[in-house]
View 1 (cartoon, rainbow over the protein chains, first blue to last red):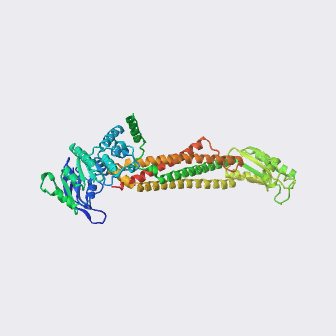
View 2 (cartoon, chains in turn brown, cyan; view 1 turned 135 degrees about the vertical axis):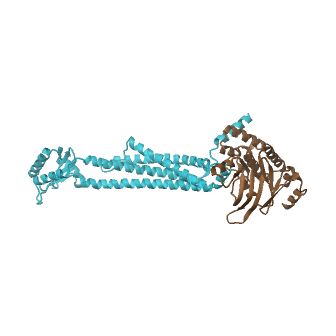
View 3 (cartoon, rainbow over the protein chains, first blue to last red; view 1 turned 30 degrees about the horizontal axis):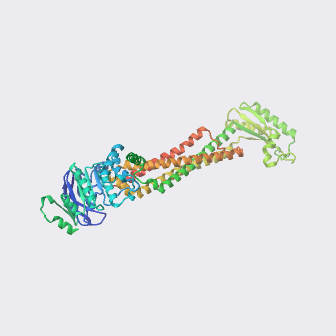
Length: 236
Length: 313
């Protein structure tokens, strides 16, 4: 689904924020991405949702090299990716409904299908009563749930979420992670960047640890490192 | 019941959605509407000027085409005043010559009261009481325009009858006037080009400014997989609506202004002025101005957007 081969990334003439990153995420996998602040998590996510091109190396998403695909193909690939941005990036002049409906409208779905999907997902994130609200009238947590609903509404093949539960209480956070797990069970590949060690413990999936521009993957299920979460807790 | 109402609300939400980008709050785009209104208004005036000048020069040309005038001055070449009998004798001889000429359809010797009325704005109602000598004017209608040789022969013959008399083809006077109307028509064409260029620059400027203002939102749409066409379509639709409003308002104001000018020019009743009274054909030509500006806006917006969007990742 996603593969990185010796990927380096720098912004302008600045230092490399990612160096020689190599990994492969198979289709239908569920991974956490973690690391200290400034480790390059958001940059890595940007490469995965095709928001940036690598300075060097090869990034493949859906088997396509993102540097060499045509512009039209890149747009097509983006329609299959659901992204939850750290800063939500909701459109302030659109209602919650229209924000959530946006990816489906872009993909050209019919209004009745959009309505059906949007209402279902708004129910799921517990905001059905805020369907007509503008984002700036909602709390941070509610905005985050709208952003999550928008990312999953069109049933994307790949979900990339950057700190999706940062503003949510544990109960709602658990509910959202369960939603991601459900989608994952239906075949969606999920990558969640988070600092929330408790959630990583509660939902034991492989963890991509990014530190000083380099990356390693730990799988709690294999229990190689019994103290993985304790170490992560200390590190953050 | 409550559920039904809520559902209706939801449908309303979807139906009310017009743009993914917040164009409604843009002040810059309203400025563009004002610019387009002004451009259409000026376009109307410029076209009105062109049409009326063309009509005026046609009127002058057709009015004087195939016409000449013979002037028999009241003074001879030796500056002596001629008496009435002498004037009548010369007039009759010239009249006889012209009536016998094969190219002449008809002639008309202008009556004294007509002559007095013609010079009244300068000399008052009774120039004869002031002993101001009046010439005799003979208006000639021709079957066709004369060749240079025929004209020269006619002039020579008239001079043979009376050396002081002159044959005026009006050509010099007409040439000056046509040069003048031609210059004004050229100015109206230059105005039209300036209007087109200004519209083009205003639309391109507004589109670039709006794109820069909504860069984050446009990037978000791109990240969700929105194609350049999808984004451009939203801008284009918005600009088309604004341009249409500008064109309609500009056209109405332009038409109103032309009607006012036509009314003022009509009341003056001065034949040398353009009258600005347009027929259906002229109004049809006028109707092309807003359409042309609308198409210009649309094409400019589309090209500016496509170029700018393609530079984005």
